[in-house]
Image 1 (tube, rainbow, N blue to C red):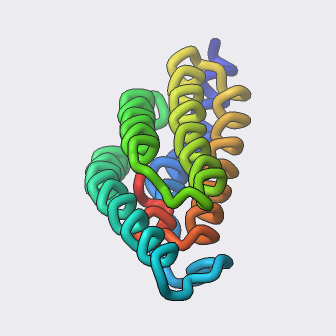
Image 2: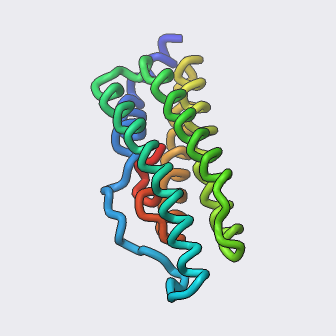
Length: 172
């Protein structure tokens, strides 16, 4: 038990970084706007409309996530599970909201990958929270690493599709 607590204390920096910094990227939204054609016409208009609706959902999630970051600042690892669970709820809500939107027909597979990546963030956030609560330091560190990698993937998928707010990495 003492060893597990010590292990959790040693992972403070990793977990705090995930909650405070890992939840968002540098905030740059124009690094790689889209690898797809964004020409003119109905398809481009449909995509722009879809992205605007999706980004509106992400903007709301950003505000909630920012409030969590402020709450988590300075907390010891043992106090993070409720924050991580709230983070998971934000990601669940965002993925559900995005799932209810209708992307352009040719973009459904790409958008589906992005939505699944947001859903995966919820899964890993809960898993990290549960591992901390159960005093499983090794599992918490391993899952925190997976959560960090999942965040990077989600951000890259969002940037690749052309999201603006949703690709900032601050929506969950």
